[in-house]
Image (cartoon, rainbow, N blue to C red):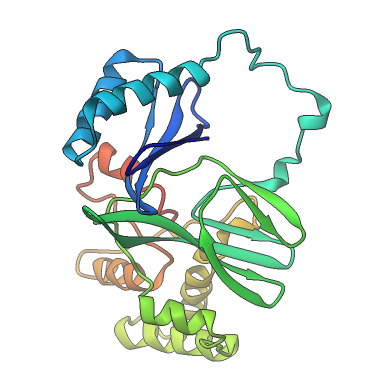
Length: 278
């Protein structure tokens, strides 16, 4: 739902978190603010108002609009626990936001930075390969994929402008244009050769270990396709190359995230765009 004003528009939608909504403020079709808030909380409404005022929005107008949204979004009189059978969906239709794989299609969410009238803002875009057709669209709670609807949960907030981006604009444009077509077998062979270049294993185990590591790296890009996946157990005496192996894997795996000297807060903030490899 949206509430337009003279120079900006406040939009909101229910959040997967109970009693909260996803609030977004746009000016000239550019997102200048977004967050998950408890709109029924006077304290949180005040915090949102302060942030929007700092973005040159009129305080009195903002406060009135936030109260209006709180009234519309109020759960009073609504039984949110009752779900009819007509509302039930298959569990397989629900996917995490960072990556999804379905029959005939797959997609990946990329955080980008866009220009706004007041500077820059983060935005989530989904790059989709749907039965041979490539396209890009804005991340929404529901996406039309392969003649069906998939539901994104949890719905991520708009990314911070400092969020790490591992896919360049040039490469994304080339992919959308139909480029970046590669031979999977040749990619795997190059992967094995790269690992072999930097790591040395006992001769009787060299070939098998290289193939295992290369297969595991490929698996990290498609782990969503399985209900469970294997973990690597790396051990050895000091100075045997364990750290070198981890550094190499961090350059090859899908969105690696190191937990070494990482706070729990940083881990939570990274969950949208840097999972799954820890």
